Length: 385
Image 1 (tube, rainbow, N blue to C red):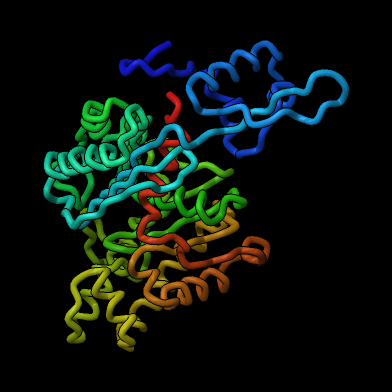
Image 2: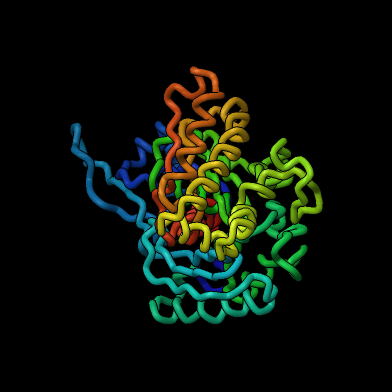
């Protein structure tokens, strides 16, 4: 079957077990694939032939002969096609084109407020995404687009829902806009899920259960359970920033409620507390800068925020039982002060069985982590559709 651009596409069945098995890079014969999947050899042969025609796998060598004609081996070829990863933050947009092996080939980042609205922001993504693809000069290379947004996303539709810092974005059809522009499937998720996926794939692939906590303008968690992103019934699993904490009992939150974790422990809340003491800070980056400059009040405030976040994470540890908790975002990455506060609370309050082998660490990802995660989401879910 051909898609509108003349490329052969795979049916849902043909892109399932065989492709996922070969994505690990290990060459396998048709016989080995049949054994691993339990499929009939004729079915395996048909699916291998379909993948060969799309260029997603290639013949790499003959297996050692056990008597008779050697069997041909096949391996994943992630260099023939690619995806566009899009990281839309509160004040920036970062896009990058990666091949299906996840190698970032070219990227571009610019300061642009999400509050400018979807028309402005997505027009920038389309214009510069097409420029990056033109720079590669590989017609038909793009197979999917993955997008991370700084707000709640209804996963089934890819539309943001009541995002507090994204005026004009509520229910905006982001997938339709980008699919219309690029002619490929578009997947959208919130930025914390995307960052969790990037952190997991790039740095903790052997870990099946991981929590990624982003501490920035808000506080959110990306949940990796059983090796997959867990989104919940409506796609808002991990929204820990709006968990009630006693320390914030009457403190108003941007969500309209009071007592939320992020109302006293996110970047803006820490900055507001420090301004009361005379320090000229106005957001997460300013708080991080003050910590990095050795300001004692900033260090104390961030460590206390870590303790408060840690007490919420103690509940998460009992509920989810992760092997690793990763703290990311500008506040978490300013030294080890937030990390120290969180560790102090979690290790003191969690049960020995849950915390005995638990690792609580800072993010290993670079500023390209969100683009990497958005690309991974597109590769895993739709790259061959």
